[in-house]
Image 1: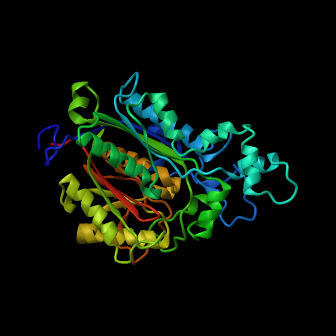
Image 2: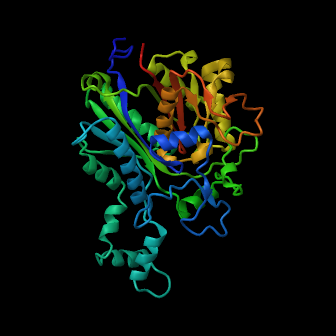
Image 3: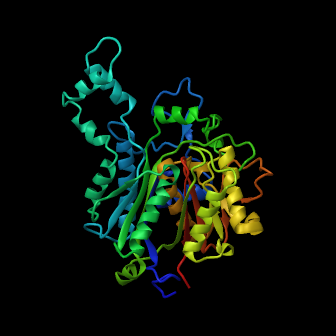
Length: 423
């Protein structure tokens, strides 16, 4: 492998900028300080009434707002803040010299807007779909039409940062943020672009999404204290906690980055993905798709399993997901996996859904840069069925490679391998 090519002769993909927004704060510095100190960003929801709901907590980002307070606009605000930081750190000015790959949450018109349309229909009694269409035809709600189109968030970010070509919007459930990064890596490797702005963002903590996840029995109902609810890998785990935020990575062809004197923060060495068609929310019982995704990421990176120093887990805190992730890691890394440090950021920021893969990618790169593995909170009751080295206080160890896992509802599994400067 040359300095700027990997073992397969492909352009080495460097990371030159990172931006993060979570419930822990805005910016890399604040997030990393809080994460490694073991502070939680999960708290009681104040954005909307929660009386009568089984789950009343989330990792909401309350210091960035939007008007109206709807998922696509909030997601745009988070993405803009993260991208501003990442592009600034990369030292890029003017139009961004590459493509935009953006993970955004599924978009649909939300309850307050539905109610406004229904009231505008002027009908006493049940309101039909035809009544709503007639209200929309009044042209009073044209701004909402643009707001609730799936590609609008990426279009606005592309315009804001001057990215090249048509922006790519994607939504592969909980693996979306990682998938956006994978698409950027592949575009650089194919020589289609020299740089990529990869973003995962999600601002969809709203009543409807909370209720829908509750109906799936996916959410923790341990509301008090909020910071104790997310318990990845613990025996008493009872579900995930919703979170929100965004992360942005600037990826570049390493040769280009070096030529312009950029500071390289790490490398994207490998990407692996595998679809799992077993069930809409459950993993295949044999773990084969998870195992295949992890192995594919290692193969793509040209690394043997013993080269992984730590695992940034998907680690949702749901009974089944944690068990299946442990099974997959043990199957690929073998008995050594029992002693490989593993940690779940979701114990502190909640599950940021569409943004999770990107946010956890950012934290994986910071783990390499600082040689510090963040803790997993609330691991007070270890699960004997999950024989892993779960990090419970920040651990200082040499880290040159990180495996970051993202496993999505609907069966989209995406794993990424990050590395330090090649020797």
